[in-house]
Length: 165
Image (cartoon, rainbow, N blue to C red; front, side, top):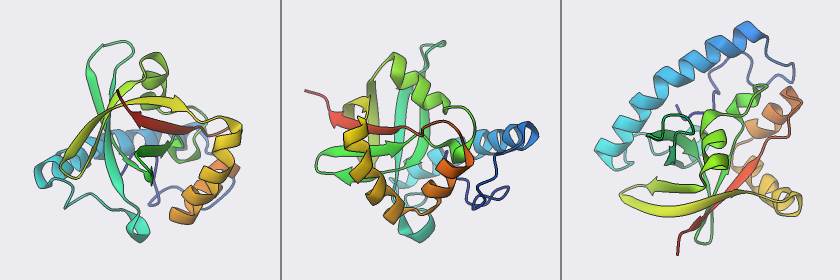
């Protein structure tokens, strides 16, 4: 199950905000499942764990921990946009940004693994003008993003990862 995509969850299709207890429980589930998905993805080069609901593709994003300085990898749904990889910092519509987003805000140098290919990239938050058309494509790929946005007061960031020079 990719982080930030808890379709199994506590009313993922509802627009009602999560309670603090629901957020703690769901965060724990995601924290426990992400390493398993990551390991299976790496072992199989994305053949297992490389697709999610309705065939949405999954990548592995590695950031540098903002406090630890250690590499942190999470499986995420992604949208290919030319050479760019587009990600959504939804955290299932929870009230706070996911840790991976906070990490890349501090250090935008990331790696993205898609299948067997790992690419060094630079991540940035999409501008409002960029986000609109990308959001439409992202929701077409994974409809729950709209319900996640309806569930939270925060503006869910869209992240554009561009190959490093």
